[in-house]
Image (cartoon, rainbow, N blue to C red; front, side, top):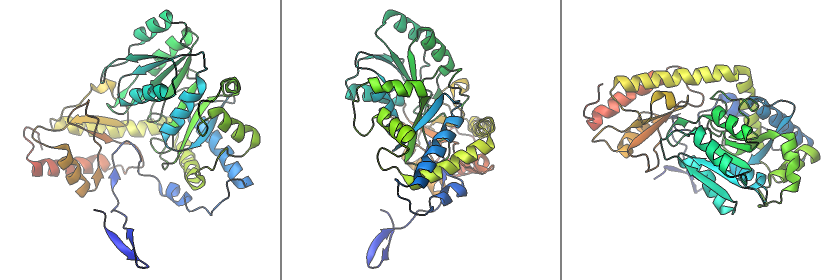
Length: 383
């Protein structure tokens, strides 16, 4: 039960002690990002809010590797909101989407498609199995009705990085449109809208872009967004074309955005652009390398081969005789928050190295892990 303290005779939740978040979003953020939330209250219909949206859209597009032919559309909500806006908006009534699925978030695209009644070919590779570009090629060759392909770049349920460029080349060769869930990859993985043949990229503030939850976006070519005028909307709030027209043509949000969170997102994007995408990838890669070396030294087993892993999430089997819940709770007592997985993966815990983490976090975390595994009497794990 959460601790409470009386305020004017009322009970109020006390903030928890500061923790190092090693879950795959939300993440620990820079103090400048947190401070941006204190920007004075702003009416979302005033010029300063419009200017904020314009700047933030441009910076999100730059981070995604877009050029003057691209733009981004902002949405108030988690990455799933932007993903549903994209999936439900881009496939025409006479179109069909090929959904590539090798984990929980590939399945999420399938579920969104199903909810909206969009014609679909659901290509399941199985959890923890790599996507096969040759299989995608065969399906597209056999079914000319498919107009779009949807896939996840970084499948965080397993930590697998999917072969985006190879699949993008296949999709482009067949003249279809590629929609990518880059929610956990933008800012942490090599990515290029043009070279990867991505038409629609979905991202969010609160993962590798190191912002706060509440703002997500879709980055796309302007001509693709303009063409959505001819695609009847399947939703009201998540109508991607409606948001694009409001933000790009009218210069005002379609509905009330999360203004303060957007100020924080702009600050996070400024930090991202100042650091450089390549430098952030290098920082994340180094953190992941150090964590994985420590896990290997302790005899812990990985869910995937290391060449299949992303730069930001590592899935590790819980040692025999240990319950994930106990491991989580004792590590939280040490000041670290790890993450569980879906039941399809088994008794596994996830450690993410996204966000603003001190350079000594891998070493300090591994020392805490040693203490916790000692308390839990983990058999066969080297300390």
